Length: 172
Image 1 (cartoon, rainbow, N blue to C red):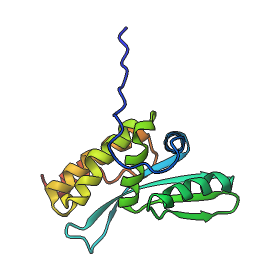
Image 2 (spheres, rainbow, N blue to C red):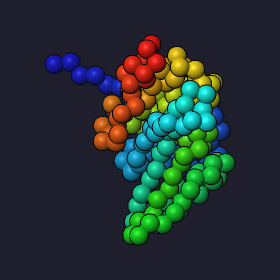
Image 3 (cartoon, rainbow, N blue to C red):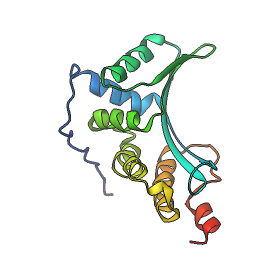
């Protein structure tokens, strides 16, 4: 029986001004305490009528944990949204630039979600930033990445919009 060991990417040469222990802590929060959702929705204002939005959220009954994550993000120039629900607190990282920056900072310390984080940092977010979502062919390429991430997260959300849906819709 052959065993496969995934090699973690080496830390990028980016500035990490916080105390060193904070990055693995936040990486672990991404692994075990977050919800990663890639929303694909109809949006008539877009050139091709659809948009892709990756989002990362953290929920916890203890405000201290989410306060730490909120402060970490703010110390690195990100602006997450911290809010209170009935008995829990929720921190949302929904701005694409903020999500990209957060994942780049903690990527070397993420273990369980390494495949999703890699696709987001290397392919999906740069593709969105590069304008691939404004052509049908580019959108299809991005949907391949969306489908890869969804496969890894085993989410139960609405999967109406996948690569096959758009390929059929546009006859490509």
